[in-house]
Length: 274
Ligand code: PMP
Image 1 (cartoon, rainbow, N blue to C red):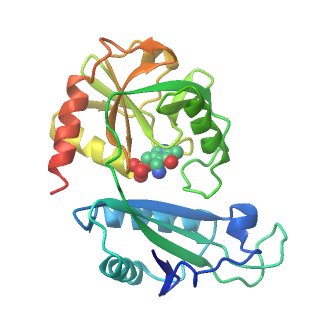
Image 2 (cartoon, rainbow, N blue to C red; image 1 turned 90 degrees about the vertical axis):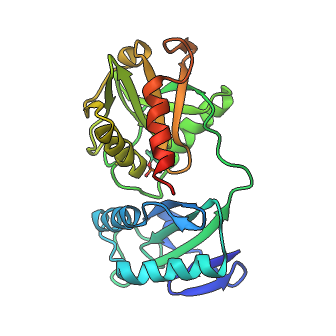
């Protein structure tokens, strides 16, 4: 495994994280995951823009510009080739004696490495559970602080289902690591991209596909009841692409099979990969 550590390519043993790295102690940093298909990054620029935005929102100045980062990532997959997988990257505020306020002097620490998938992530029709969204109110920032998401996914795992779908009161926000869509009367609904959800890159691709396919889209919040009574439910993410959800909290969605619009959106998604 090769690690892109700031500007250098290191072996895993050479790449060490300081005990006082603020990412380690405070979760004080942001991250991205970019899918690699056939050795090529998918939606690279959108992910790098979002990384820059997330970092900016927590006032971390990235130690490179986008062109430099792109060149470094290309070097990484040249030296450590990946056919189908992803690159994970994170940047933290840096190393400083433990104290909550930003340190007067700290250099951001950037780390990236790839993962080749042994098996492709499943997109078989999945099941989900609802869970109250207890996260902070800046879910638009792709922060390293993932405790709310981790606890939710663990809750789903313990119930042998694939995803936990967050709700604030009656209102659905997103999944623990995915965006959530429903279809009702041929209209596609998903939560607006505000501070309550991550503006998923796959979500944007789905909306662009829906637009191309002439599907009516409403970026509007919907309730748990709306979801349970919908015609189709699916989730989207970099790793899971577009995945149908056919049961939530033990309630079957429509006929319990992947819906028509979900299938056509996924087919179009696959078409965009080549
Ligand atoms: N919401 C959350 C909370 C996530 O963690 C993710 C995955 N990173 C997504 C949505 C989907 O985002 P993307 O399509 O950019 O992977």
